Image (cartoon, rainbow, N blue to C red; front, side, top):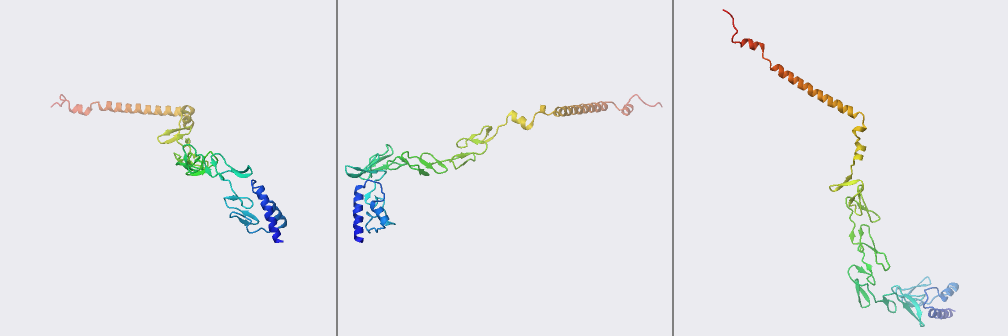
Length: 270
């Protein structure tokens, strides 16, 4: 019975594999039959280095299929049937049985050498179409752009983001500025702030000054106090001048005693 099962397996597989070699990997008729009857698989069921795991073939990177019987198309190529033969249909810039030969390099970014692109500095990829991301990861596809790490920018993620005036890089990879600063790198003063040397300080306008300090006209008691102060100062000055004038006038009068003693014509009769 076991020999019959093995022969049945071989016949079922060979027929389905040759007929559907251009189809994507899917359970074969034998796989379905095996699931139904729980038939054992031969030791050489998986080809080209594949291993049998839980009734399925685990193929190496180069091969595919239910028994790892056919080579994979590389670099995005697709398998199709042409004139009774299964071949790989290759994308633009590739050729060969498995699309392994590169026939195109991006101009100015690399050169073709033996079926491969040798990329110039700062470029990478099969066609040298992608930026080398020094501090980030490529976004994929043919655009070749980079997604930069936090703190870096530029097409190659090689330019550090430097936030000025105390700013810092946030999770959006942009500068978060301190109060009073704005701009892509916090290099400008925000509206309402002015440059004072190397700092941005709040702008002081007449309206804001009046709002903080008030004006003389807005305080009714201010003028009387000022007038009273001026009057007191004026009175003090007048009083001081009067005292000085009186003292000088008094000191300028001759003494009566001195005038009697010093009179040459005065005397006592003997």
